[in-house]
Amino acid sequence: MARTPEWEKLEMAVGDASPAWPLPTVTPKFATWSVGGGRPFGCTLETCKRWHAGIDLTGAPDGALITAPEEALVVGLDRPWDDNAKAAFLRTKTGLFLVLGGFKQGSHKEYGIQQGQEVRKGDKLGRIHGPYGMIHLETYKAETRSANSVWWKTEGPPSGLLNPTNYVERMVGDKVSLLQTRQRHEALAALGVYKGDVAAEWGPASIEALRAAQTSLGIDADGKWGPQTEDAIHKALAVKQGCVTDECAASGGAAEVAPPSAGSADVLAAISRTGWWVIGGVTLLSVGAGLAIALRKDG
Image (cartoon, rainbow, N blue to C red; front, side, top):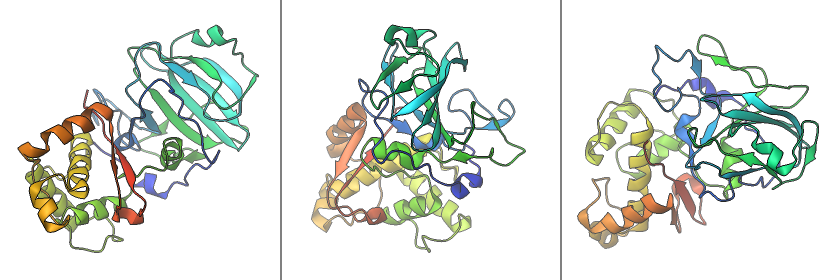
């Protein structure tokens, strides 16, 4: 999936220090690969003329509850979105303009939510529109903004657009994504396929390492960091750092990346079911106390 490098230059959204996960009945899953790329389903460079300006909070069934991530003023309800889904716009007290796309039309009425109303963190806002199946979250500097902006592929990022990755990670406990180039280099280095400077720009050595990882993981070695690649690398890191294979256990965690063994099938099945895998004592990305990695089933 294409992703513009301009995403790495955007300022991270700040907002509340511990925003609430807006889908309280849904296990936290988010597709970091969707940030700065084309829309995740049925989208090609020919059919999509814009960048994906947010993060998809995935796995939400029809009618799932949507709540406010933090204290805010409701400045938009039932705004046109996609496939009959609607969007809500919130201006937070911390200076963010939040776009939450994926509402079932009119579902805010169930909770008496009106435009111009102030809501608290965790207040019920509405319900998920089933065919959409997720919340698309965008973050902007609030200022006087009253709507989101389209990020056309031929132009730079819209004024005030912020990168929501860290905001979403705070919702679920400072989880680590593989969005930034340095993070990807560190992941490939941890898997033993990248030997260069992790602070370097993405280049031929990076692509060669990525292809080596893809080949070893049994997926198409196209040198592109798409959703299948991200999921496979997340799983390989979980297996490696968790030392669930015989080779890893025998070598103290130094096993090179390889296709998951039959002996790790139960672990990978558990990862797939829960969407999260907690790893203790991880040094990757300088997280010493442990981390949780988001996984996503391709749809």
